[in-house]
Length: 159
Image (cartoon, rainbow, N blue to C red; front, side, top):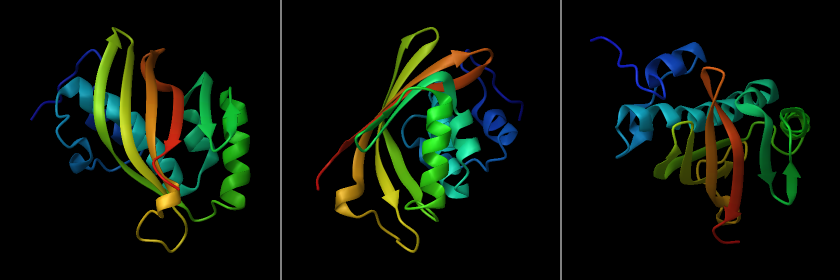
């Protein structure tokens, strides 16, 4: 079957280029080709956690990308890289994230928003502790032929 290229790209090709095995169950009901392409950004972030790789994680962001992690507002790819490097060497060593999309909205020809739910699993955990369950707002942009994360903001669900 030939790959389908859409304005947002081909999800399978995007993931293959990043060295990620496609998990089609992640898409849930968001099976439109553009929706799947946009959701590869979240899947790349999840893979960065899986690898505990700050460089891989940070490269998913736009140069001026923003990440709100706990009470820390990071406002550049380099700040994000340094924060995650310290985290993966410290408290987040061996941690990973799991989540799933709740909404995908296209705001313009080059901007999309995803709402997801999930959380951080510390090393050895099989379920996310209630205090680490979050809702996430993702702003995803087309950036020089690839999809980048412009903003990632989390809010605790409970805790």
